[in-house]
View 1 (cartoon, rainbow, N blue to C red):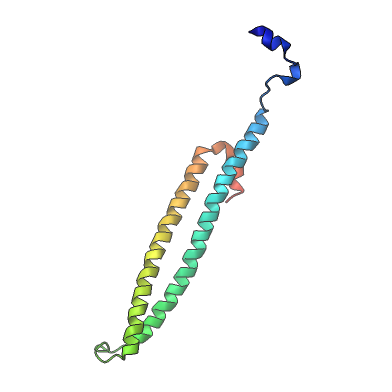
View 2 (view 1 turned 180 degrees about the horizontal axis):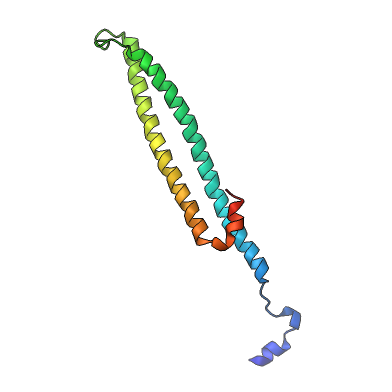
Length: 130
């Protein structure tokens, strides 16, 4: 068995990478995951901010179509009633999506905190992705 190794040229023998190269490779992998989480967080926050702005605009417009009389709904024009129904549907969808985005943002933040806690030796690579 050892004769097999004896015939092998010294340069052709197994050599492991240096510990520094291993640390760099690991840091790049961890940073890649952190970058993906950060990109998802950023996209979710941007979508949330835009939707929140649009939802506030729709709420303001819906308030105008409701009117301010106690019996406004009795003699509201049909076009305004239709518009009010459309606004109600869209507002409900927008509020649902805002809740989903808020939950996603919390989950992404938890993923990031878990990543940081799991790889403290790569804190410098993670710091560049914040």
